[in-house]
Length: 98
Image 1 (spheres, one colour):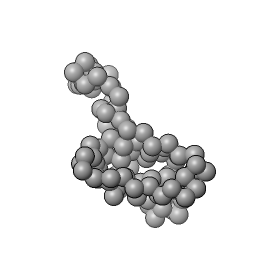
Image 2 (cartoon, rainbow, N blue to C red):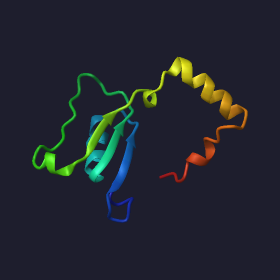
Image 3 (cartoon, rainbow, N blue to C red):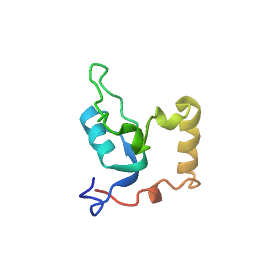
């Protein structure tokens, strides 16, 4: 991530891979005080390894999210209808593809 951000780390990252190695790398590429949201579902037999040295000094947040903390059976049809009716422009949320 550092290479993709001109040598800086990111403030906020969303990890959708569901791969513990990817999440560990996303953690490393997020700045002090930044937030990592893990959306992907991990293999329950895997372990997420984060460096313990100075962990408390980083002030980072690692948050798991299940469907962006929505209630999918209630919310997805509403979001889909708003999008299809042109009232919720999801396309403009994509700022850049890497």
